[in-house]
Length: 125
Image (tube, rainbow, N blue to C red):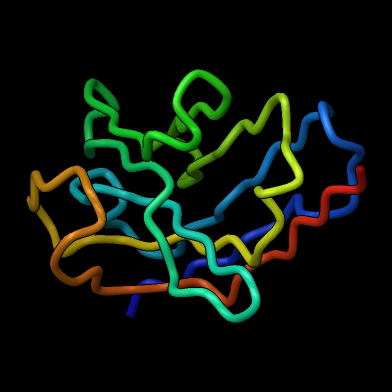
């Protein structure tokens, strides 16, 4: 098991910023591609961003490119999602997820092995 715990969600005005963090237990984070997903009420869960296990490669959904930045600190077992210029369409529960070790797939396809419980992001207009 690789428990993932998200934090940092909350209420922010449109145009504002939030930084989400995902704390990862276990010793395998350094060999796992990590991703962020979100799910709004009544909608399918959608891919937001992913980062390779070395941190050298990232991928973003078109809807968040240029506004969101994913990063990781393997020494501290954390993955972050910096969200800037938040829009009314960004509110959702945001989930952190971990792929199986050594998977190099940097998108939302296929299966992620572990998921966090999610953190709520609300944007007021």
